[in-house]
Image (tube, rainbow over all chains, first blue to last red; front, side, top):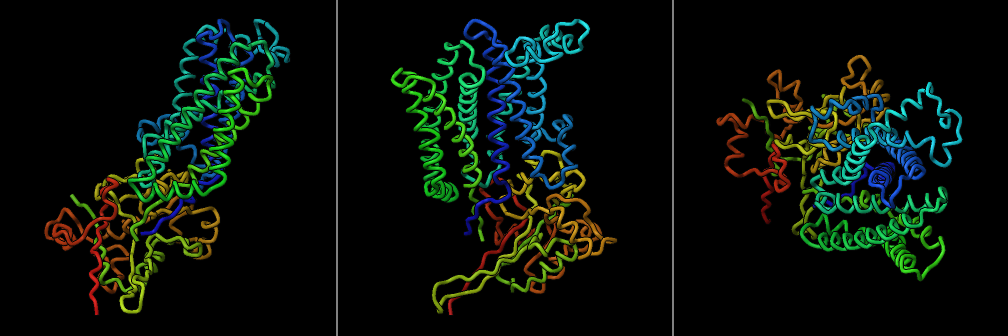
Amino acid sequence: MTYAMQDAWGWSIAIYLFLGGLGAAVMGVVVITDMFRISKREHPTLVVWGALSSIVFLAAGSGMLFIHLLDHLAVINVLNPLVLFKKPDAWIGWGTQFIIWMMVWGFFYACPYLNKAKGTRDMPVIGKSDECNPLCKMMKLCLKYHRAIGWLTVVNAVGTVAYTGLLLQSFPAVALWHNPGLPMLFMVSAFSTALAYILLLQYLAIKEPDQDLRKLFERIDLGLVGLEIALVFFFVNYMLSGSESGLQSVNFLWNSWGWLLGFIVMGLIVPLLLEIGAVSGKLSGHAPVVMAAVLVLVGGFLLRHYTLVAGVYEYPW
Amino acid sequence: MTHYAMVVDLNTCTGCNACMAACAVENQTPVWADKWRTRVHDQEKGNDSANVARTFFPRLCNHCDIPACMTVCPTGATYKMDNGIVRIDDALCMGCQACVLACPYDVRYAVEYEDIHIAKSFYDEDVMKRHRPGVDKCDFCHDRVALGLKPACAATCTADARIFGDLDDPEDRVTKIVRSGKATPLMAHLGTRPNVYYIAEHREEG
């Protein structure tokens, strides 16, 4: 037997998976928060900056995949939505369409808020409520179908988040990837990193009087980080027996400082303790939440990087 | 119908690598970058002079009935022909390399822009078969097979270690070997239903 670690997908694909999950989850969270009037009001600034950040993340992540392609011109073959009728079983096809349409619908959802949101309402053209302004007409049209657009955004956002895990799950020879736990772990991690990013936005950029919403996000993120720790434990327990490929992956991860110290300690346990302190009121001020959010984001990337690197193949020669 | 398959006899392979050379010339693979459609692993088994043995393990695309590489391909570039051969349409392949990760047999490799550039002088631009980068792998020399010839590797094998045939023909030698149970596929537990079968080594003492 020969055991080999994959080298076809490197750091650029880890960034793609990280930014894809983060961007889609940010979009999903801000749109759901606004659609259901959580905290009893609309959130124009949060929606606009969340949606724009999400679009930037997804564009940058997709750019990483594009750079990685061997034949860049042939990318046209996957951008056509009709490819799903030809290849409905390939997750990259679904992921590409989810990402494209989530960016489109997400922008349209944020559009009516552009003249209300802090930071964009004072911009030229956007701030004017001139009826002849084409942007103003588009804003009105988007507002008319706002809820439908919101649902289309959320469906595509959840699809994108799920896709990042389903993609790796579709490779049958690697025990670390080919199991039902991986998409679940990536989903929980994506929403956790999204809430961390949104908290950073709220504390460092938006600075609106939305303490009730911040507290809610802190509590949810605390729950997600706790759930992620449990999932990682289940994962390792599953890998320790049943296949040599899985065992080799766990051995690699357990001997990697980046995984142990970077992801497990600094990306999960320390943020968990900081968030417990912040939520319980034992740690006051913005610093613990901001620090926890930064660590959760770094941990989210390290999770995807090490999951990719630790894919072990078992060859019968 | 036709259902092409190959039997590899690990007892008769001498490790001459003629199959690799024949395949490389036939299919113009980027050998300068150590990229081959078929390989022969040179292995040493045993731990002392009394039982040490040098063995060879040829490998190639297994042309699975349920190819994981085809499932993950987002553009439909990887497809299965009616005769069982799994091929890649170079015009559709964008080279995302998901198929490289999906293949349990490590038989796919990336052809990069640089490989295409070097191939122009190495194989002569006028007769080049590939003009775009993408992923490449064995296709059982489908153009030779269409003419009634064996794949280059099987045709050149001096030891009869690579036996090519049609599993739908009950009189074919490959069918008889496979039905006898002497040859088995690699990693059948993964559910890919491969069509390359191996006759295991039968080492004798003394």
